[in-house]
Amino acid sequence: MGLSQRQPGPLLSLLLMGALVWPPPCMSLELIPYTPQITAWDLEGKVTATTFSLEQPRCVLDGHAPVANTIWLVVAFSNASRDFRNPQTLAEIPAFPRLLTDGHYMTLPLSLDQLPCEDPVGGGRGIPLLRVGNDPGCLADLREPPFCNTPLPSPGPYRVKFLLMDASGSPQAETRWSDPITLHQGKAPGSIDTWPGRRSGDMIVIASILSSLAGLLLLAFLAASTVRFSSLWWPEEVPEQLRIGSFKGKRYMTHHIPPTEAATLPVGYEPGLDPLPSLSP
Image 1 (tube, rainbow, N blue to C red):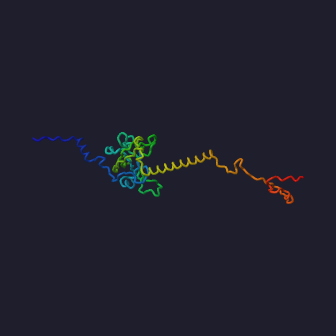
Image 2 (cartoon, rainbow, N blue to C red; image 1 turned 90 degrees about the vertical axis):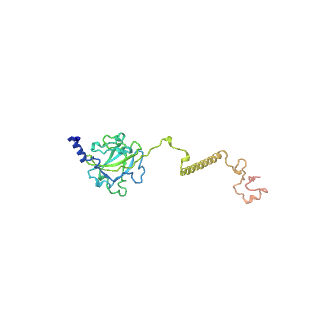
Image 3 (cartoon, rainbow, N blue to C red; image 1 turned 30 degrees about the horizontal axis):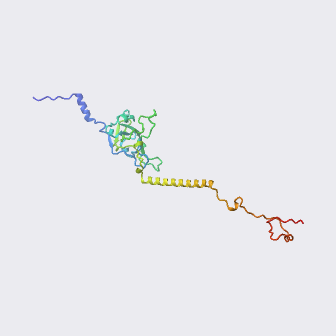
């Protein structure tokens, strides 16, 4: 006598049929073969302590979603990216505070017309990039939407991906996750090595030149000061002819001696040396 097999109830049968007919939403999501990455433009501050700059996904998402769809950027800690589940409605979109609790959030909603295929001509439209964490005052403004692009709280590392959602908030397509992105981290003042041996060769040469110039300027200043003060204590030599008591001069008469009187002058008399003799008898 065979054992009777128990048939499942009608409710369980419907659930099993539904699971076979309707696959999970994540299985029907289209995967776009694109990996977000840091911009390749040669820019200062592409990665800072609170921000990083991604290249814009131009000509990547055009054929995968209607124009009405919205492109979101998902930001997650590297170790929490595998646990992220795509939201199914607009109300389920995680805001920035969820990064501190769940390890992920969504920000920078864009439309396809904001990501044209044409590159900027002549730099007039700016460099095409998406700067994550570039709005430090958005959390303080109550009028800001919940998808705030506030500065990142720690060095990470982070992973990001783009998620395409329709007007109702249902996901339509997604890209791959990026490689880990680690932000710069400042050093504590006590950990900075100031030993001169750690300096580069250029720094040592520049420091030597500056020290030599400073020494030359100091020597020039001391020499100028010595000459200046020595002139005050030791006046210059006065010529022998100008010293007091040694000046010798000759007295000359300015009037003319008639020739008739020159014969009556004493022998050896030189005009201009002595006063004229009296002409009275």
